[in-house]
Length: 430
Image 1: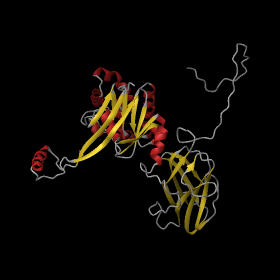
Image 2: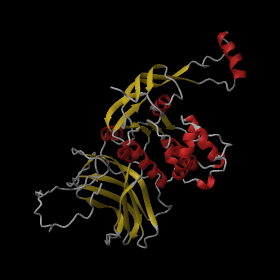
Image 3: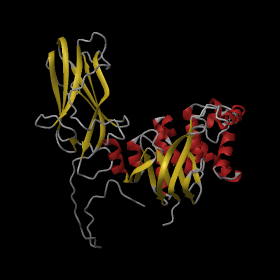
Image 4: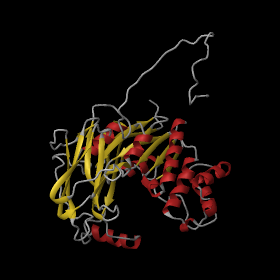
């Protein structure tokens, strides 16, 4: 198969340690080391960032590199762009690659934004005429017109990301490589970048992206590779790889081996001398039994336990469900539901019943707060505190699995149609 980018049994070793900080110190230290009088650690500590990694990418494929910090994701990107070379194996790139790996890479801090567009564009393989032809598009996308003639050393990290991605995305590369640097941009610009990458993917550009924002990867990518300690653990459909990453305690902090029972709150957001505090939560099935994980489209009971030092009349219970990247999926309160809760006194609990649970398989976060009847005074607040794993036998893509059904009707089209059928509200006119 003809790959645009191919890794063949690639390994990368780095030397760690080394106490010298300049060439002037390095030379005498090496001489001492050879004479047996130097520190043995000079140049002898080795670290394998990648071990025998192989994969290939075809045009129009979007690949997500997933894994914990130190897994080797950025090393893959640097090898793909020839920023560094493999210790063994072979990396083949057939076409122009455009990369955004480190903020400010390819920029000169003393040059203006305008000058750096030409500089960075040249580094990425364009000639001056090509940069000039796309200059207006780059500037418009970056939304930095007012700062074009300002030296980039005065730019914020978000402005760096805007300009860097704008240039990288308009080089019209065969391969676009993006690291987590987009996380410094604002939400609107991140959405804009995702839309641009999706457009490039449709046009045949191959994309490699590193991000810890799983929903973002699910929307953009069709393939994922899970890396751990420099090795490929899984290579397959993006949903399957994300599920492995989020559900296996080897790669994440998920609580896999015990039910989500009541958890104490030694360091919560409890105000000093609060009259009531949340002592923990537990996830349960419809029979009220603690569970290791929830199941899509089945009932889920969230039991919120509390301890009140004195009687609390009509407290408000607030709850949040978040995706693994912090995106709020649902927020509810007893006040919004126009419920009057019973007075809290001593130890007790209140159950939140969700039937059916619409979340697709994956890892989520649950948060809860207790608020006074005035709707302002917070007694206790556990923000994104409790991990919830959801499993499912259904194939879904995204964060939700909505209850649904299908129906259809078929009619023969003839020249004798009387035209009594109403036209569609939204019609494809392409």
